[in-house]
Image (cartoon, rainbow, N blue to C red; front, side):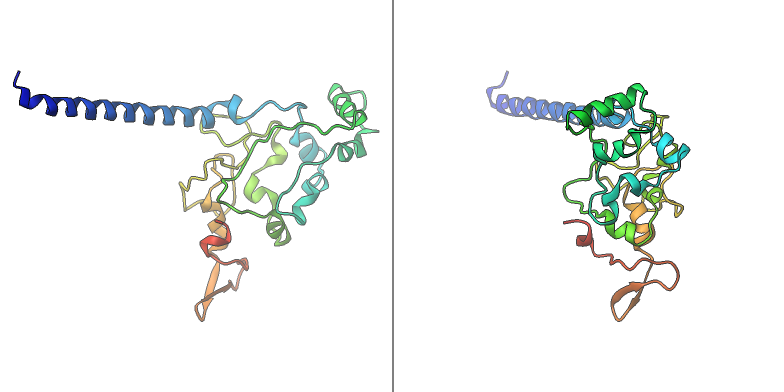
Length: 225
């Protein structure tokens, strides 16, 4: 073999190996994303106590803010304390095995170690109180939680109940339905824009639309810090 072409062949082999490793990395990334978004065990973690939103918010018509008391006055809706649970369950269903678990945490003065289901990307700033105080219904973003037994992150192949909060921050649909979140929606910017784009512009400034718009600007940094 001609010695002069050996460096070229070596460079070609190196480039081919780099391309192969890059391809493997991309495949692994897609596979990992598939596991996160489509595996019900990942998207719907088993909680320490099988709390049912359907029983509480649906069958018994308990308002969301009765348990999530911080939603109206804090950026985070918060998780109810064990004391909040026991406000009812010192009298209600006290012999239920699930309630006995709650009672044990209460007697030991320990919080229930709920597993976090949904999260926002670090670059997104969302505040519950501004939306709740503006009259936005919880179901507008979270979907029909009152029909859900087990809450989960949205999953394309998961036929079970879902919570409409994406951990990826991907913007995939800017034409989401104006009716709010449904059981087949991603929680994505399209849902935000349904309300935030309802503005008129006067003297170069966005103002509340004449009919039904919310008084919030469209500047990117309002939500993206």
